[in-house]
Image 1: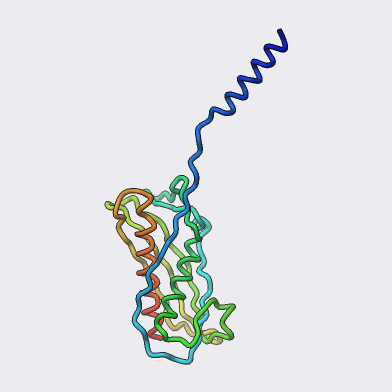
Image 2: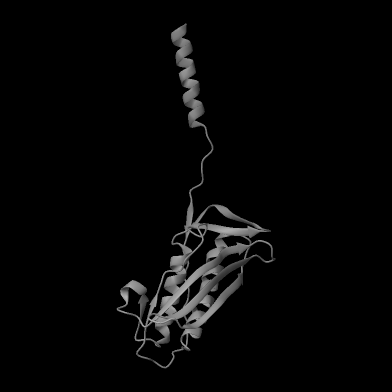
Length: 192
């Protein structure tokens, strides 16, 4: 009798352990900014770009705001961290201007004359507007590397409406927002 009860309990606990809700897989989305800038008169200057600083929340989760809350979309992440994607887009746009002799990650440019630093301030979907919008905002500063002169500083932002009210529409809108920010940044920096 004990043996039958033990087998029955074992069978029940095994069945209960196997009957649980399926956890949906995490989907990873990519961003593909389009760089389109005008060329500028070339100089002999070199420009090093430091990686953008970003708040801890702006890592890989796709975020949205509702009121004063910043929340994550469930089971959705960026394939590449937003600060890395935006840094690369800005470098690509600066290279496309053909303004500087060399542009790249600051540690990889040999004694750059100018340095670009910045901070990613917003990278989320705004749920408080209709239609919802992808929001990208960055603070950038162009400085002399071996001096104290600030050549240019600005806050650049872009808001792009989502084509539909679904997570799958976020990458396209965010790609456009990053494109606008990177292209505007390059256009401003190429003036110096």
